[in-house]
Image (cartoon, rainbow, N blue to C red; front, side):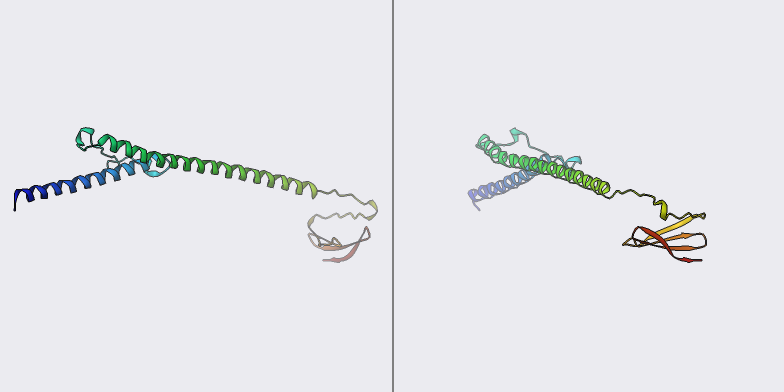
Length: 175
């Protein structure tokens, strides 16, 4: 092998190492940016040795056009960061709108419940001519759907009343 081939081989090995180093550096930078932009994620809350990113010092880079590379990198990262910030703001706005919508629906539901309660209220009137006195405790009262029959249960008996044309009549008495 000639010296030229040996130098060429060494040069290729160094270029491959540089490419690997750059790839890993870009991966670390991307992970770091993700950690910064995703503030709510558990990743940003964990601080371990593995997650700390090692950035080489500037003097370790001996690349021609380094400042141009950095400015291009920054130009490419800016829109991504702006987009992430906009997405996060949009998600926050959407969350606030959902909360406001939920509050409004709960308030509307509460108002409807109050209206139902107020509209379903009624009053009783005692009809003196058709009243019955009972000297035993009444343990149960039941009224059928069309309010035509009333059943009243005491300790020892059940009385069935029929309500017709405003008149209450005893229909049957069961012991």
